Amino acid sequence: MPLLEVDNLQVALQTQRGPAEAVRGVDFTLERGETLGIVGESGCGKSITVLSLMGLLPSSASVTGSILFEGQELVGKGEREMCAIRGDRIGMIFQEPMTALNPVHTIARQVGEPLRLHRGLSAADARKEALALLDRVGIANAASRLDAYPHQFSGGQRQRIGIAMALACGPDLLIADEPTTALDVTIQKQILDLIAELVAERGMALILISHDLGVIAQSVSKMLVMYGGSVVESGPTATVFAERAHPYTRGLFAARPALGAPRGGRLATIKGSVPELVDLPPGCPFAGRCSYAVDACYTTRPPATPMPRGHEVRCIRLDEIAGVTP
Image 1 (cartoon, one colour):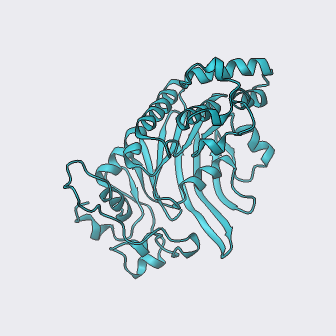
Image 2: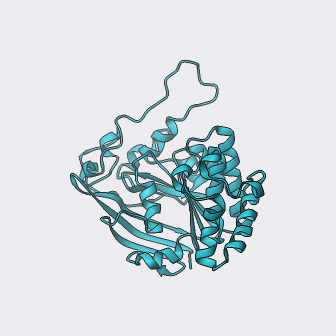
Image 3: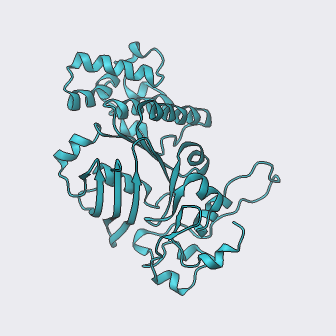
């Protein structure tokens, strides 16, 4: 049995302009110890997808489909039941550690809280475990900083504290939502290396969200490319990188800076911008920005097409695109 099995997940959000499909039929599975990356531009549905797994969507959101975690159906679970899973069996590193940490509580209290709630540890025992966790994630002089507050740490240190909180109860699944946002490149590498070490050390499954293709290439074994709430391409990371078939995936790759490119040259771009969710066509969500689009693309939701080397693509014009070098 897979650790996580997501089947036809659909999320509708209420907006001022009416209901909007934020996630449109997402499917994937994740085994224990497996690593999955989700990539795409801002507004493509990456974070909403993982917040669905955590049960952290707005109360007005409508969720259908199935999310099986260790055989348990999470869709429709009450808040009390989800609280027993969040922070215990599923841990999450949030995108912005300054807002994820409570500014009025000490680090010892915040890192120790999951241990008190889920493991029933006393305050003294939770403090000892918090110290061990902070040491493990690389907080220097952790013993003397247990009673410090979030504003007394740098951005990279706060992210390490967030990782310690997510790992406190030894979850089976770790979700990292763009964990290196706003960090400089040196700290980014340290954080990504730390996450990789901890996932391997503890045998956890990992879902890593990023808009950075380089991060995805280095960090995960398989990936989803999302656009407009849909998965447009998925499969083993190496295969998707080598065989990129969907026009959106090709556009993302073409927009990467290249070493050795002439100075002053312009980067390739994908024309247009990510549309509002309520403005997505009923067919392919990328149709409005795709140079291969025909009338049917706007009205026909493309099925998942298996490719020769084991990945899937949702595009009805694959035959026409196949002969064009990505």
